[in-house]
Length: 371
Image (cartoon, rainbow, N blue to C red; front, side, top):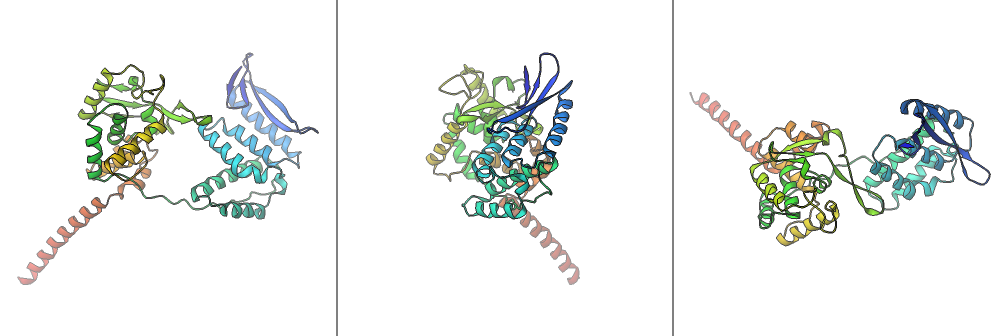
């Protein structure tokens, strides 16, 4: 039968079936029930109603059961890598503390005590924030669906702090490009592509020749590398609709890609040297770090090449709206928050322009006074 998410199926008879857990028997084995409908949307709604009715009669429902149902529902709404991240956070950080706890026994004091305990584990602010987001989502799900929660419990999360944007300075970029152009193919070309398009690591690794248009001189970003279980990578869609974008190819980049195409024997622009798949993102990151060491440059992440491209764009006086579209941001505000004020050179040039204008005005005022 066809499958959608983790527990909603399209049956051979044309109907949709949705399964959900109704509790556990005396041996601890989970018990399931199914509802049926003519469409996916209808059966999802029927399952939600059935869950509410079932859970309203249960006062002993465990947090772990709620978390499993929440994951099950989220699987129909978000990407598989997001679900994997949620599951990892739950299994490693949240369930060991709440797994045997009934939802009806969870109070604001319980949650605060748990959060303080996690803060003492030496976790980063970003990890503590993610844990708080997932915990809040599960508790909210329990409250909305009548799973023993008498009231909504707020979860105090650390405020997000944006890290400084790391990038290559102009002279560092020139040194790196000089090294890349000595052998401008394979992994070196991948790094050069990041510097001149702002594409993400996963987007570059999975780029196929079918998405490089030499006639229209454009690159079509349609795929990205996604982390799967056991540390392997697969091909998925970019992180948002805005990430499905078109990037123009400059003369210099066009020539390099044409030369690479002539020597290519794979559907991927950057194929794996081990098999017929795409280049492993971790391998490309290692290659990039080796290039930095060879040139005596600061060790930065591959993603810093994206920041470098964006900063050079702003420094050249190009418009932010176009940059936002090239980077695949969902809003221009994201681009402005990250990049518009990221360059010290831009600030200095603006100060000097202001000084010149102010100086001219001062001279004019002085001349008037003298007259």
